[in-house]
Image (cartoon, rainbow, N blue to C red):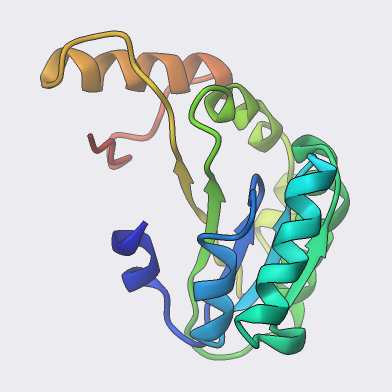
Amino acid sequence: HQRIIELLKPSDVLYDVMAGIGPFAFPGAKKKCCVLANDLNPESYKWLQTNMKLNKVGNAAQCYNMDARDFARQQMKPHLLDQWKSRKGSYDVHVVMNLPALAIEFLDVFNGLFTDEELTQDNVVLPMVHCYSFCSGQYGDTMLEEMRQTASRHLGGSLPDDAVIRQ
């Protein structure tokens, strides 16, 4: 968690697709990032909103109670398109998928999410996706290769060579 929070800068955008009670969302909002946080579980969503209030982030984060794929298509995509059109200056975009038992299965939502035309407009800042997952293999190169293959399968194609997989 801390490694990702340390990556965030005040100008960044954070989409917390499976936010739970907000362990990424409220620290991101406290760092003055633009945060959209989502969780399908109504109880988690309730506590996500409560944690935003308790951590005094005010309107720095928007919270949603949706399926992760619906959130990506209906909230994240239009919001990111708007960021590309309206923002100037340097910023990074992060997508956190922190549901280790299932998150990797949701990577398919990125396949075809944007059209070629949308991706060739000015100011496109592609997101860095942080997807947490469990692995059945031993730690080491074998496990990392298993994760690369699993992620590729759910994305519907190979991961780029510069994609980083960490244990």
